[in-house]
Length: 308
Image 1 (cartoon, rainbow, N blue to C red):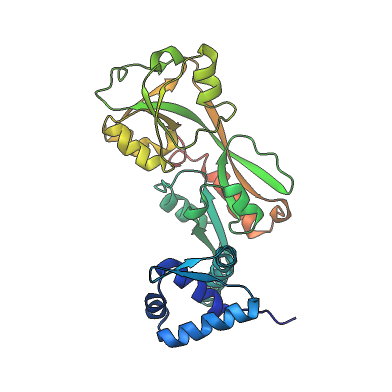
Image 2 (cartoon, rainbow, N blue to C red; image 1 turned 60 degrees about the horizontal axis):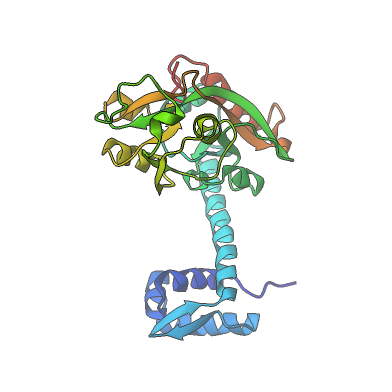
């Protein structure tokens, strides 16, 4: 069965949603406004539903257009990646392995690992998919990425893991904070403290379960900021405190912009692992090869994912 819409229609929907105007969308796509209007009418005729409605000289998307935009994003993204794969293969790259790290966008470890990878493999290119960090497990399942570096224990059908390292959580604050000289903090130390988090969803073996609940002591929620690197900047400016993984904090700690304390006297250590599709776990699969080399590299003295 022939599809009702082609790539031009999908690009049109994306462009109109982004710009809100036929003239601006046409300029973005490099066509005339009349040609774009004709293409829009054709798409609506083929689907037999309106995609946009006019409001104050701008076009507002209908639910149909919103749904098609999600599909368009996936299809056009897959096509773009396929084109990149072809260009890489033409340059001697035989396999592209896509990787993302849960929550964090700190990739200071990347150059060291790439050198380690290239010294031990041929024809494999590592592509970082930073946009998948908010839900990397879903990214693995829907094949948007091949390897997700995540914390905690993962038990999902169709996914397998390779352990990487153990990393402590740190309670971070500015150097002028009243707790800055503490080696560790307990729940009662932080009652009423402004606290910045990247998620308010409680997770087992994290600060909610190990720091707040045992003493029934809670900070004052100051903000939810999804980017940990932005949290570090806010903490460094004494606008709040937070709890983050130590491996991603070393630059700011070394520079003295923030200080860190153990979470409880005993400390809270979180396991990190590489997650991939179970079907990619064959020893000779390039995805498995990269994950296994990443695990081996994490045991090296200069590995950037953790602190020894």
